[in-house]
Image (cartoon, rainbow over all chains, first blue to last red):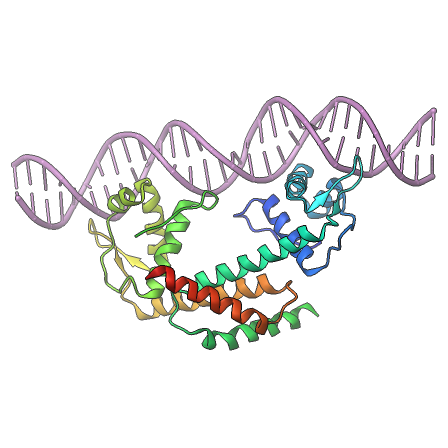
Length: 126
Length: 126
DNA sequence: AGAAGTGTACTAAGGGATTAATACACATAA
DNA sequence: TTATGTGTATTAATCCCTTAGTACACTTCT
């Protein structure tokens, strides 16, 4: 778990976003055990209460579940995961469309730029 | 000037984003006179200082310029405007690519969804 | 049994950013 | 001149997030 936090947004929200992203990609699998609050806090150099804030909000959204005094785990409910992926996709598209709306370029003009950026990513990852 | 503010991000940043967007689209033309701090504040039901904060930051970025005790105006420097458009576009693409990265769909699969969302926009606007 | 590690809960304090209130100098127009 | 409207500057107040320190019950493992 590697994250670089920006100073603008609340850390607990950035943690949530990062975890959601990993759930969408499949890096985090259903039923998988999460690091404990204290572990993750230590790893990210943040306060355990901040992790607690992130985890508990994700519990409310059913993305995580916790059995008493056991580390939280990723939801095993397919419907919840499906809904998460759906929302993630919708948000990506909504924001993109809203952003390019004022630009005087057609989607066709944009395609190659997106393609290039996508291939740049893959290079960096490997 | 119609904006709905979210509660999370600072208002002055949302104002800046909105004004930049209008500059990118051409709704705001070079040399055009902006509403005064007080006028805009009144119109948006926010504090004049918040508008001042937005305007002065845009001045630092050369997007606006102000002659003493006169309403600010849109930059007339083509290079500045061009740079703005470039950054706006890059940001849109970066964010989009980052968002769809974890999704298990190809860009080709996404295209029709984007197209549909784009046409929905046009309908709502007219 | 004992120790270490869980999640959970509560309170307190601070820190930084944002918003708000006010005042001032100057330009413009009536 | 007078009044109104500019931008600008300074100060105060407010809000939310973060950090910090404890405490407690329970599970797991040694």
